[in-house]
Image (cartoon, rainbow, N blue to C red; front, side):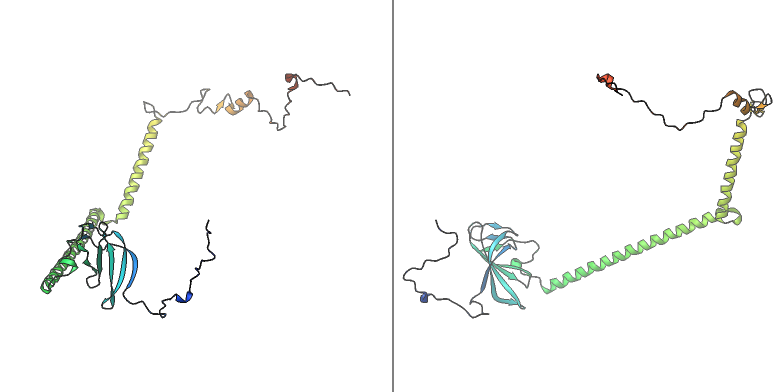
Length: 277
């Protein structure tokens, strides 16, 4: 069984270390040719493979080779990417397009038609006259929107002014309805006082009717002995006579009563021995 960690290596008898050549380049220099590295990316546009007709949708992930080209656009480096078709493994190449802020398909696939583009392969074919017409049309639409916003703003201001005017007219009409030229607060206070006096008069009339007989006489309270108000019976007050009949209440005692303990031994069949002494 081989070791997990190899501490020694096997050297054949004819091993000559002088024959080993090491390709070292000076520090700070790059290898000749374009710089290539492996990256993970998503398809920047939908495309169709020209070899097998496979459709590759936008956003599909690939393990691609990224190559830095010598081309530049205003000091912006242009990169080229190499991917493989998912069906036939054909090589597809596309590169960045900083001018149009997009990607350009080079070979291996054909870019699908996109409705928002005016020309093929991401090229802008709009002429100067068309661009001027489009700018004028956009400016006209912008002016129309500004006019509409101004109209809406003026309409809101008119409505606010009309509401304020209606409120002033309503307040003036309410003040004119008060007679005598009194203040609104004084008139309201007089109305409240008059309403309170009217309620008091009604309560007094209801109380007077409650203590009147059918003939209109005032009801009087008669005592048990036939005298009015029942205050005195045979020369003595009711409280004096009641005191003679009822004895005075007993004086409360606050002494604690000791309860006698029950003898539970007899119930359980336990007999106590008599004391010797």
